[in-house]
Image 1 (tube, rainbow, N blue to C red):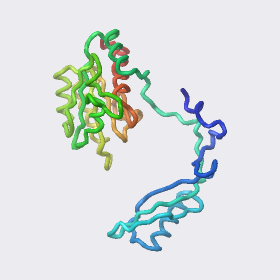
Image 2: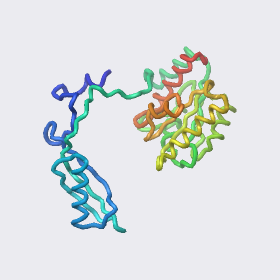
Image 3: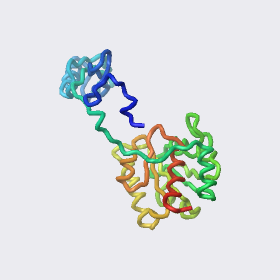
Length: 256
């Protein structure tokens, strides 16, 4: 369903701005740290900065001395900018989302063999919460992981797995899809690592043989495709989203 059809009909969707106490008041709250010592001058610096951001009536409602010449602020202001919401188009994974049991039945009816999926958190990233949520049996937030899906064989290789090792395991078990999870994003390290993974897959001649997916809090479908992946899954996506995409793509691409 188009998001515009579920929006507040009293709002001009071509001129959307933040809402605080009253419609179109533009009220926003910002939190940030400045590398200046705590005091009146620091407060005024924060107020002027928010003013330059395009917010009227900036008000510093909270400040805290972080030590070492740093000060944290919470500032209110009234944003004057608007967004044409009706003209926004976001790249999304295009597949019908099936429930866990429906995925198993779809595989049985259309693929007629187990679907093999291997995943890992790669590079120096030690976080496993993302890949665990998608693969491990208990899943996350009431959504079971791929280990509970009928006709799915999944392998979670854990964290800090070199890209080469993940690819080698995928080849060994003849995987249908590879899942790459990335949580650490400082200095765009996730983009470097994801790019390396896609390039290695190309060099191995595997891009046309296996689906390559990535996920994480800073991952979008648009970014994933730009980096050479088939699909990207960000926040608020679960195992059924990933599995639905994989199994329908397997059928669509004739890899049954």
